[in-house]
Length: 206
Image: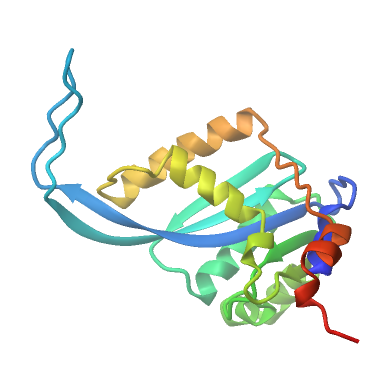
């Protein structure tokens, strides 16, 4: 826990950006009958009946001090999917960074081994050398600032029925563009000192 908190209070350095990554999912729901548009005195009317169109996965990547985020919508979240997101992050969004300080939970797909399962050894090693991974502790996913951004995404963009992946990708891309244009940053306040006072139950008794 303290490792992650210390990373969060490092000064902004574009050569060593701090990036938080998290994953979630969203069920695709289609309409059985077209909603009745709203009109003066009457809100939009949506039929209670719906059709399930499967589930898509959400990869959220956010740079708290840079005010940047990237969201990818995929069919799965396997080791290969994670590895592909890492490659895109390093080569497309942070090509000039020496290392990316990556904060994420300790999911079994979130490891250097996933890079080696997806790419040739030389390429996997190249990517691994540009990562400085900081895992959140077990039951401590609240320490991942990407969860804050996922909450904003779900509340501002995904709080309704979305029927298919192309529609969701278009809607999320528009949300991401608007939020990045506003350079929305995250002002993290919780410190190591706070943890030692408020979370004493988590520390060993000596």
